[in-house]
Image (cartoon, rainbow, N blue to C red; front, side):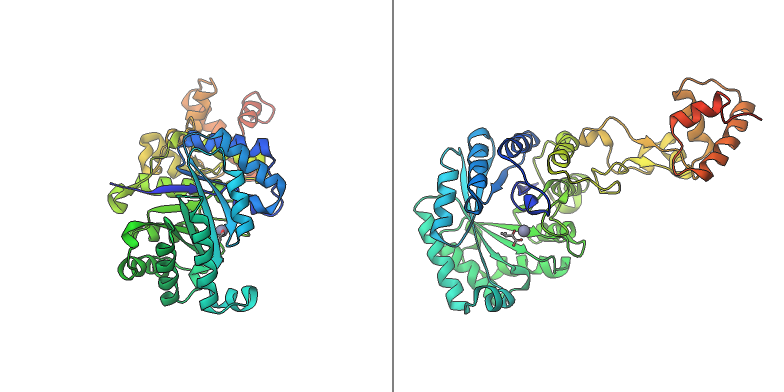
Length: 385
Ligand code: KIV
Ligand code: ZN
């Protein structure tokens, strides 16, 4: 089984979510939980962005022992020096350099020709190589970069000393087939590609960040970058918990897996949500409140008979206690009776039938019927024939 490395950028790209600002202590708290989760690589921030971010990255570098710590840098010496300063106490430091390569960014943002882009990136990588043995290079907006130029950039980065080349779909423009094809082409055409790791970094503007990252894996990516709960710029990044569970659920299909401690996922998700203030939507895959909740009678009946009828992952896998059978208007008698037993009510068939009819009337008026509603109903506040 091929190992897929997980590069977590909750503290950098995740912190770029509008409205999110993590202080030094919060960064350390999240980083230590990411370490417990078994993340291989943690991008702690962008040290040149502000003195506070440099301090935050330095504090993470000091606290974390079992994951590589990464600092982001533009392709300029001052930024690289800021990362050197921030990572001086890291056990396993890595520099993440980036420079845009797409025609849109070259023309409007950088105002550079292809040759200048190649020269600028090469100069930065060679400068950084004096101080870092591990360097990741990202051609920003790789997804919209001409494929032949991307091959040229990748070849240059390898020759200059990059150890990982990351392929950012910066604006979430790709679809799985095209994005996978980039990895396939780089693997086939770039000399020296076997000596480095290839990484995928996807954004979710069209809702395809996880699908694109999985396609990259199928086409040879060694590393997936993303965040917890999928937070990040605009619509966010690939959610790493989705990648870990997609691989763990279908190792037969992907022939690849992560070494994540899956039982720490729920706790990590809650911590990131609490400290960033970003609420996890109820229907979010894996970590949403409804991910293991069943409302319809047919599903509840199936679940009560055999959980695998409607659950492909057990809640225990990610560190939750149990699935929830939520009572609403679609729920059936089987789940209702189980709920009564759970709540300590022993009713005969006739009483269950009467209570069930009342419950259905109430369920038509309310989105969800709670234990308190049922108790009130049975104690004749609502249940009076
Ligand atoms: O999305 C992006 O292009 C980035 C780079 C800095 C890797 O986050
Ligand atoms: Zn990004």
